[in-house]
Structures are given as C-alpha cells and as structure tokens.
Image (cartoon, rainbow, N blue to C red; front, side, top):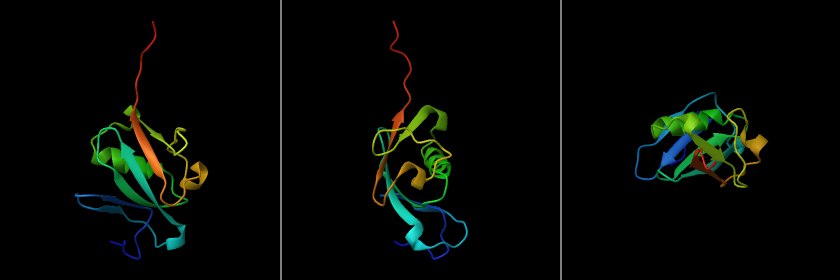
Length: 111
C-alpha cells in the first residue's frame, strides 16, 4: 500500500499489524528508501524513510511500538556497525532494500 503523497519521513509497515506513519512536509519519492528492521525478539518491520532524516525517528518509533528502551538495544547497519541516532540513511550508506539489525545490549563477561 503506497503512502499518501504528503507522507513524510518515516512510514512503518509490519506484516499482520496496523500500519502507522509519521507525517512531515511533502517530499520527493526519489528521496525515500525502504528499510527492513530485523530483531531477535520481534517480527520484522518495514520502514519507508527519507534519506536526509535522522534515524532517531525510526529508532524511537520502533522502540515505542515494541515497548523497548532505546538505551537497551543496538541498531546495526548491514555491515554490522553501530548506527547512531543523529545519523541519516545517507550517513550510514543505507540503500533501498537494506536491513538494519537490532540486538539487545549485553554486559559482562569479565572475570
């Protein structure tokens, strides 16, 4: 289901659940990419996001939907590098169809 023409920065689509959108100013569809967010603990979620929007919006939307503390999870790019909230998809090098992995933070291991 394509978003309305005035859909903005982030659109979320989860299979089998309702779709929610964060609307901003009208944008050019060429500036939007589709990103799949995979998690160890929840179903895969698909986002449609502008290339110049900070990924904090995607992170906050995902964590809010799944009742997660943003400080308790790591968002990783397709190469396994940590994504910072202030970065944009262009900063990270995300392309249309890329996947972001979410991992729970783990402490410990020291003797």
